[in-house]
Length: 140
Length: 263
Image (cartoon, rainbow over all chains, first blue to last red; front, side, top):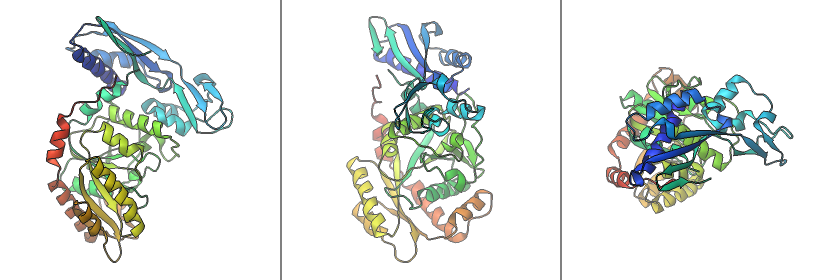
C-alpha cells in the first residue's frame, strides 16, 4: 500500500499547480508509471481516490502510461530492457518495488555482470504534464 | 517531467520538531555510533525519537542497534521499523539487507527522495540522521529537500580529522546552516575540539572517551542492558544540551521561505 503515498504525492503536485495557476480547472494529468517499480495500479487508483477527497478535481482527469524500463551498462555499454533482465527472486523484486534503487543491489548487466548501470527510463511515478484550462505545465 | 515526491516530503516531516544531521567530513570518526547512542539516550529520556540512516553505501545503524531488517509495514506509505524499543528507524538496509549498495550520486538522491516521500514518520521530537562521511550528495540533498536541518558535527582529537572537519564547518557557515554543536569522539588523552568550537562559535557538546568495544556495548544496550555510566553520562549530557540548544530563530525563518518550484 505504499502506492498510496505516491498517489498522494501526485495529487499534492496537481493541487499546487492548480493553486499557483489561479485555480483554473484541471483538464488532464498525464502520469508516467515506470515499469521497474511494479506499481500495483489497482492499489494506486484506490490511493488516488482517497487523496482526491475534497479536491477540486476528480479521478477522471488522470491518465496513466506505463513507461518501459531500460538500462545501460556503464562498464560495457550494453543496453537492455526489463524483459531481458535475468530473473530475480520475489524478495528482491519486492525490495525494488519499495525502493527502485535497490535494482543496483540485485540486478546486474546481462552481458558483463556489472552493477554499474544507468536506468535510462521507467523508474517510478512521475508526472508528464498537467493540463489546466488555457495553460499546460510539465514537459514531454 | 515533474517529480511529485517533492510536493509531499514537507508533509511527511511536518510532525517532526527537529531534524539533526549527525555529520562529519571524515569517515571513521564514529558518526553512526554517536547518532545511534544519541537516539538510544533520547528514546530512554522520553523524547519521541527517529533515526534515519542516510549512509546508504555504508549503512550500519541497524547493526549498532540490532534492528531486525524486515520489510516495513505498509499503511498509506511505509511505517518506520522499531529500534531499541523506543526509536523509529528507517534505512536503505531494510531493502538491501547485508548486500553491497553500488549507487552513483544521482541514484543516491533518487533513493533519498523515495524514502522521504513514502516513509510515514510518527510525530517526533527529534529525527536524527546518520549521515555518510564527506560533503557530497547526501549533505547537499538534506539541505535542499529537508526543512530546516541542524547539524551536529562529529570530530576526534586527530589533527588530520580536525582539518577535514573544519572544511565542513566552513561550508556550513557559508551556507548559513545552523550547527547545533560539535561532539568529539574517541578521546584518549587531550581534547582538541575546543579550539575548533571557539573558532566557529559553536558549542562543544561533549567529549566521548575512546571505547574499545563500543559497538558491542551499544548492541547490548539496544537489547535492554543499561549503558555503562561513563558512556551514559556523557550522552545524557549531550542530549540535554542538544535539546536545550535548538536554532529556533533560524528554523522559524526557514519555515517561512517558499517551497522550490519543481516544474
